[in-house]
Structure formats: C-alpha cells, structure tokens
Length: 298
Ligand code: GDP
Image (cartoon, rainbow, N blue to C red):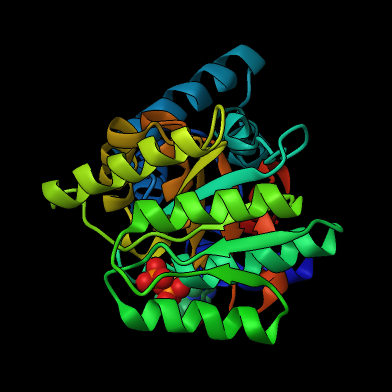
C-alpha cells in the first residue's frame, strides 16, 4: 500500500532506486554482480545475507538461462522473498488467557511506544488488555505508562517498590482474576553487555513462569532499525539469554537500513511480528514479507 511505501521511503530511495538503475537493462555480467553486492551491503543486509542472495540470484540466472539485467528484478525479489518469508509468523494469542507478552530491549528502542500501539491493536480486535509497569528503574517510565493507561482506559499495574518481577507477577494475577485477554509487560531498557541486568531480566522471566503455566507466551525484543547491523548482536544476545519468540523492528521510517531484515533472517531468524513505519498507531503493523518487498522495489 501507499502508506507502507511512504513509511519505507528512505530504504526505498536508496535500495529501490539503485536497483532500478542496475536492472534497467543490458547484459548480466560480473560488473553487475559486483554493483549488486555493493547495493545490498549499503542497505544493511550484512555480508552473510548478501552472499546468500548473490549466490541464489546467480543460480536462478543460470537455471533460467536469463540474459538481460531487466530480468533480475523479479529474480532478486524471489530470492529475497524466500530468505525473509520465514520471518512472517503472525502473533497468535488464541488459546491462552491471559496471553502474556514480555517486552524487552535497549533504552530508546521504542518499547513503551510499541506497548501503547500494541495495546490499541489488540483492543481493536476486541481483546481486553492489561499493562504491567515493569520498568522499575525509571520512575518516569512508570508514570508515562500509567498516564497513558488512564487516557486510554487500560488498567496498568504498578508498584512504588522497585521489583520488576513482582510487578509482572501481580499483573498476571490481576489479569487472571479479571479475565483479561492480553498482558503486556514492560521492562527496563538494558544493553546485552550489562550482565547484571541480563541476569535480572532472566529472573523476571522465571517469575512470570511461576505466575502462569507455559508463560511468558511471547518474549518480544524491540529493536530500533537505525542501529543497522548492530541489531543482529542484540537479537543474538537477547535470544541466548531469554529465548526470544518475536521481534518488533521500529523506526523503519527514519532509516535507509531496512535491509537489516535480511540479515536477521540469515543470522538469527526470530519471527518478526511487527514493524514500525511511523509515529501513528496504524504505523505499527504486522510484518508481511511480500508487501514489504513490493514496497521497497515497486
Ligand atoms: P523505550 O525507551 O524503548 O521505551 O523507547 P520509547 O518508546 O520511549 O521510544 C523512543 C522514541 O522513539 C520516541 O520518541 C518514540 O516516539 C520514537 N519511536 C518509537 N517507534 C517509532 C517508529 O516506528 N517510528 C518513529 N519515527 N519513531 C518511533
């Protein structure tokens, strides 16, 4: 859709336009492959995904007996679709009540904003939502979430004391008692290198497991697309520590690094549940590989 295209305009300008020039016509030769490599790398696809795509495109070219560069656009789209398609796994909250989502990530990634957008997203599907103000490091984060909850008629469970695990435990008990559908648990921002904070978040997960059978049902890492290749390190570190089940990639509207999705798919394919392509509420949308690729190329 036009909205998605607009949201992805920076990556689209860089990747899409360079490819359009490259695939304008002419012979398919080594120079062209070299330029293609550069274009993919500059869109932050990373070395592994770029090599994978180049090899796949070469295979398709020789298999299909392709001769003209104009035939490469469809070829690359198909290769990319096969690579990032597996990341498209919509979040299914059916069958658990409450369905408990634990949100993690570094400071400023867009965690709190995404929680608000997700709360609205679930409400629009007729589901009831409860928020756990588990970012107990920043009093402001708690206040922000509580004020947001008040404005939007969403219950927020918070504590003055500083224990994130206890807040999440209380929130799950309250949600169970009230028959709430979805619990969104905020947690404090942390870097994977802050080992004591990584231990703390593991404890939060263990306590959630005590509060609800087979919970948390989703451990979701919020990533800022602006960090490009660094996103991979974050995915790997948080996945190793917590066992991630989903990703949110925010701020794709502000960056030309939209190719990072290919890098994630190649190096640590955790389902990409939602992408953020703007500030407004419908700008957090379920990730769909096909429309994403079309928005970049067409
Ligand atoms: P947190 O520290 O992870 O909770 O981050 P916040 O939720 O406070 O977000 C940090 C900033 O990023 C805020 O100014 C948000 O408005 C902004 N932000 C979050 N998601 C998006 C997005 O998809 N697009 C844009 N343009 N800004 C975003």
